[in-house]
Image (cartoon, rainbow, N blue to C red; front, side, top):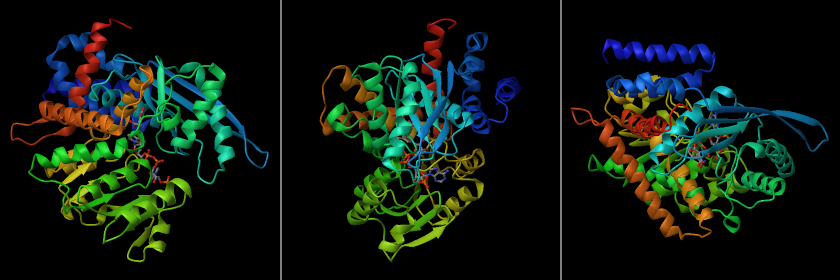
Length: 451
Ligand code: NDP
Ligand code: 2IT
């Protein structure tokens, strides 16, 4: 990077840090994108004159609201709700809702910022947004979750709509929560529209939306592996998380011939050296989705597996790592362990699971490494397909949706190769994804004038 471009990066970053003090996750996400696209921007000075990057880092709208609700004991609880509408240059705002005790404005902004570029990569017309609450669903009854969702939607409904902003799930928000949110939206607005995605199959949902992020991740990783003549066959795979993305990533990896040996949650991880099979996967689906249990129960059920409390999976030797839990779950020492353990490919299912120091290790050792905004885009892409089906009031078959998903993941991979292939042939997927996403959004912003 030349001096002029380096100065440009630091000028943008000092502005972002001054205007968003203490929001470290947001700073981290912005820096990664700005460092990737700065050389492109300084080569096209009109993008500097139009202050495209300065506009991209300022959300179009941020909504913060009180969410009061009553728990099962009759005690009043107050949570904070968020919706960050980051960028609508290429379509209505689109992005998930996260319910987790760690949710704050920094996390909402980083996710909405990432979403903007991810959605651009999907080839579909969707802007970027994210929402959520510091509500912790763990240990709550169905009735408490329902009352919380109804209160959350009572405020959110005035800011969303099928042509305005279309939320979906994320951590802590799955089919149950989308159901309660949709029911309240429909009641308040008296309209049955595709304003939320991830809906149930009987009421507007798309086949394969639950599977889409994990399946799409494996389709993308397969494309990465095939650049080296490799596949999932007989590979040892580490998966982190045990939720929606992790479950379907593990399922697809197993069906492609891999041996998946770990899963995790925020309390620890399980290592099953024999690998998950159909029976074990079915147990995990029942444990997590029906009983809402903890992953340590896996090791009680299958004695060949060991539970490691308070640890992450990354020190287990592997060929492929699929982080599918949360942001910054792979730190520098974890990345070093992965390299030491023989890992050749890290494909992110979660959003920003690797710290900048970890990414530097992957790039230095020339691993196949893809950022979440490229490799986990299958989820939001299939949300886009759900919106299409809602608009034309039709329902596609699983085969049709899967064919779209495969094509989209392959197009995203091609875009990464186009903008990320270095002179020595190494593909920097971070750079590729960021530049490809940026070009689309920036072009639309230029066309639409100063708005
Ligand atoms: P789920 O709520 O279904 O599962 C989340 C999993 O991650 C759980 O096992 C959870 O464990 C674990 N986890 C959450 N927070 C932490 C934490 N702070 N530290 C360690 N583990 C944690 O969420 P999803 O599977 O939907 O989401 C997982 C990741 O994928 C997130 O980064 C999300 O943003 C991303 N993503 C999701 C998409 C989707 O379609 N759902 C699409 C694209 C990306 P515990 O039960 O202990 O909290
Ligand atoms: O991070 C993500 O892409 C999601 N949580 C899915 C968003 C969506 O609108 O389907």
